Image 1 (cartoon, rainbow, N blue to C red):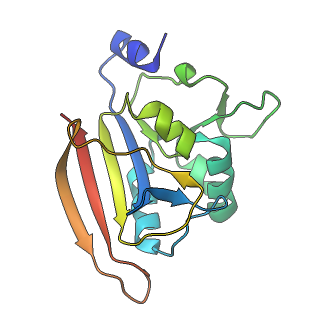
Image 2: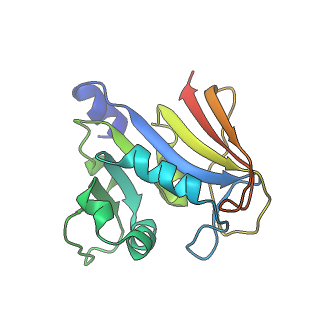
Length: 174
């Protein structure tokens, strides 16, 4: 049963995706963000606080390396991995995306493969559009404007903390 079929069997669940994306679609380079925009990092942490999040193993390990174990203690975390021997305390390890508990809203937080698999099931996108073109090795799927409607945009200028202009954009499925 797909995650969509599972969520229809329960109460209506909102699947949101959150990502910072450059103008050329890059979300990471060598497992890290290729820019310094701490306002976006705080936005990500605030939006996902207390929520159920779905992440790939590599993305999870990058977040924990930067944020420590408070990330999983402040969220219900599902880590999706192909590695059947992978273990980690305070999270639920999954090997199939269809095993996500869909009795509540789910926030998809990366990485690229997970975004690619989940965009067809997502209801809302929280995109930080980073106004730069960068080299990278991980990309966010294209946002098809015939499928997604922009409902809000909050522009921010680069400053001493944030190296590039950026916009917080929320899209809803049409």
